[in-house]
Amino acid sequence: MGWQLRGQLPPQFWRTTLVVWAPKTWQMAALARMMPVHVHLLEGPVEDAKVRGMESARQFDKGFTNATPTDASEDQLHRIVEAAQQAKSRITLCAWESRRKFVHVHAPFKTSPFPDRDVHYMKRYFAYFVKTAD
Image (tube, rainbow, N blue to C red; front, top):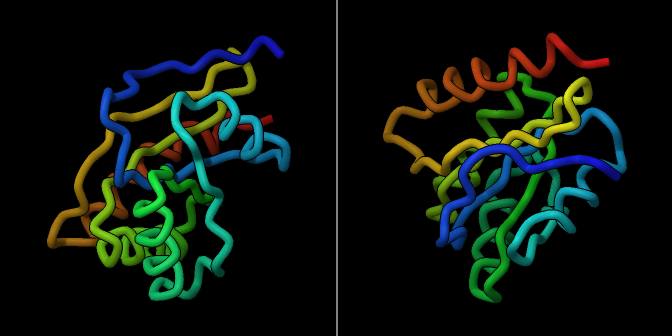
């Protein structure tokens, strides 16, 4: 389809939750196929961080990397960080840039003891992509 991954994919992608800004419905499935690891799209409701955390941990035990879409709202990002902390997961940010046909992949980072800082950082990362969306 002409899309390219841009960024550094770490050699160990285990215990990572991909937080993906994907404005079109087909993009999440396409990203799962593009990644060099097995990706599980989280199914639990974003609002329920406890359920999401348990689902993430189960999938990590199976050797999968988890992925979740986001609309980059502060509340949603807080829930994602909470679930990642519960599952002892790193977070990797991904965003689709339609104009240049790139999927940007940010380096994974560990959640900090200060979830507000993590959310602020994530919002800043996604702001560019949200602003430049088609």
